[in-house]
Image 1 (tube, chains in turn purple, cyan):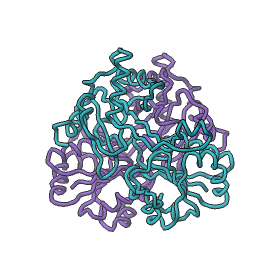
Image 2 (cartoon, rainbow over the protein chains, first blue to last red; image 1 turned 90 degrees about the vertical axis):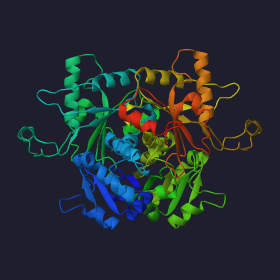
Image 3 (tube, rainbow over the protein chains, first blue to last red; image 1 turned 135 degrees about the vertical axis):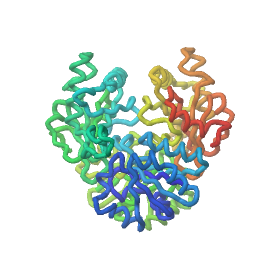
Image 4 (cartoon, rainbow over the protein chains, first blue to last red; image 1 turned 120 degrees about the horizontal axis):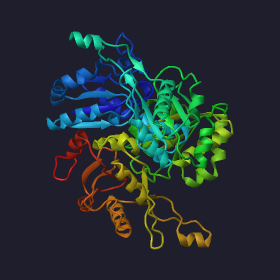
Length: 276
Length: 276
């Protein structure tokens, strides 16, 4: 049996009782490390917080491991119970769907243990989850690569009065261009997009397109370390949020659509100068 | 302090360690009973499963209690730690946002413990969460009240190739019309909309509007008891799903938009005649 277990957003205490029970019964435990493990106490001395809680070793699985060694993991899961831990909810990222597809093809039973994800935890700011349109991803711009397909999506959502969740780029274990050329793998240091960078990129694209999908006065909500003890939520215009230091990653951003009175009242508590 | 704690979707074991710790430290524990407690072992003999796990009594709070007695609950929370338990994630329903707004106005500190909600757990069928448009609610039609504002929303989502999550009506503790007239409160038995009823209503509205937003061949995914041990997921056309017995509530429905190859492969496992 392959258990795919969501860890939630904050720290090791955000696993569910059902999830913890499954981990304790598994003979092997993997944890995906290609999104973010920032808040899970995973220091270089080896996953100590989680391992202490689970009472067993945990193996880090980066994207390469999962993509290249999936068959080995799934073979283990044919013989015994294997846990694959995922930050947030298991189906936040396509890669986990891939793993499930492979498992099912091999006839390995899969059980999923759900948990909170960014997609629902942003509800904390008071904007109703059913009033969101399509979610967009904001990738890091480079000198030569400045994709902006998010622009039309935001534009459409706003035309319908809907809120837009912007997921901000995470670059973990990206091979350096140099090392790729040499055929030897060396990695860039991890990078996590800040709300400031996201807004700068958004405004750059708006200036280029000039179709008034949004502007620097557009109301947004910025989230840092969502679901953690020290989470930070601030509502304000894009221009205002550019001046806020949101601190350590992860960050995400919501571009606010049309609001109802209860949404406004709740958002008011997070507004700059309001009583956050 | 007021703790608003998500219980997740399955049963008492879906609370997080963080949530359980908070409940254990609270002097008073309420649980909202106006959405659905079907799977949480809440029999008429009084919340036994949860109370056993928590080691303390749990007070059922129906919509009336929360709306009429919120101030009393919040007064308690000014003096001591109070837990308010919510099925799914705390911000699935507007009522909980109301409670937070009231608490903040009274200067009561609020802590939220997130959990899985239907909004992210539907990811289990393989359709990517970021490719959903606006969520719609399908209310029970009556002889005289057949609202269909969901139609335009589904139409817009489908025009953009997006999936649509349809939340199906739940009627718990609705006063009977007769009792309202008499000024004495008697309640209807609880009703939970099935996938079959939802599809019938959807097709009725399509027939009335005739704008081809969808039809009986439109691919959908039906979910029953999502997140529970005995959850059921079946993909098929509206016509096909009408023939499926999804069993006990809760049900929800996704109308599938344009699909990517990984989405199709995963959905294939749930297709009628596929290897569910």
